[in-house]
Length: 378
Image (tube, rainbow, N blue to C red; front, side, top):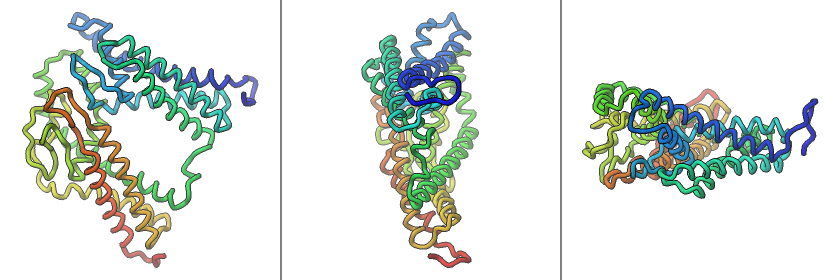
């Protein structure tokens, strides 16, 4: 046990890690359970009892671990990415506490804390899955998924907290490329957020009509609001795929995109899906310029760091490859099935989205690299 400073002795590594993992699991689940119970309290005489509402919270929490729940006999693999953020934030906060409480100073100590946190988190996930048999998630899968998430997040948090990892440890040129990739992704997300907001405003009448048609009452509105917020990150990924050109699959041989014909697939009655454009907007051919803009901003960042000439081209291409890799993973996470045979493979295709991101960002960084400057290129 590392020596601590001050009057209070540090906690044992395993105790601190286990406490952090358990706290992150319980608090993140209680947050979802409170939302579910609040919806039930608005209509306590409805069809569901309080135990079923807690099971709904369990399904949402397990979905945040990447586990597809079964609701009303339908297995949903198009998961709300927003639910993933809840346990991750909890693990980061708990991991930071565990590092301080146990006075972690070495790499082995950080991994010990992370291992204990993963064990506690995985046990809670297994217990939750076991107590919710109708969800259709096996306790073993829940334990493995929970433990993997906890060990990765807690280990990275602990190592970063004590300065054992960080961007400063990377070679200078790689650090520049990484910064450019992050900036490009932020620009893409900003463009997608703006486009999504505009689309929602333009389709607010359709969304309102759908809510009225569903007639879920106060309880249903609360649940739909929570679920819609959880799907916002998924919707952002879809919007990025739309802006870059590949679009989004909404069923068998049906795609919504700026260069695709109008899709006629019948979609489930979910508010955010009502915001999908029925046809490509005027000037849709210009939408991929969002990726070019992201590349230009990334290229300007490289120029501000003194990167010029062939090095700028190389680092710009490297940043574009990083952006493509992130987009591929994001598109994969934001796709899945909505339970129906006609709605299998809903979402963006990872490879086309990644390629579109790479090409447009490379074009943008190349424009920035080739733009004349007062100083001579090196």
